[in-house]
Image 1 (cartoon, rainbow, N blue to C red):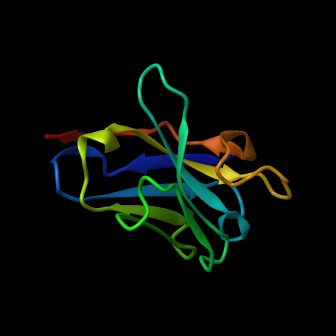
Image 2: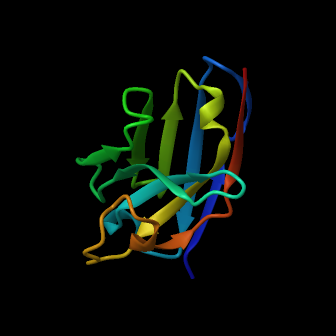
Length: 126
């Protein structure tokens, strides 16, 4: 069974940084594209970033481009999200997810992903 566990969230001041981690188990992580999403109460889950199985291709939402960096370590079955220059608008629960193999759905669509972690809260104080 696939399990994803996110950690590294917390409270940070505006302008600060956080690094989120997602530990994966139960599947062939090294052959799976991964994504990060975020969600605030009452709103739909929104795409943040994605990374290909080999780490060579990354994709970002416009709102985080230039500030966030997604990376992965296949040897550790982990994916990371380095978040810099945080603002209050980045406050959300952050989720990592595995992308369905062979799906034609865009990588920015939640429906393109099949397994999700429980999320980690990021709160940015202004």
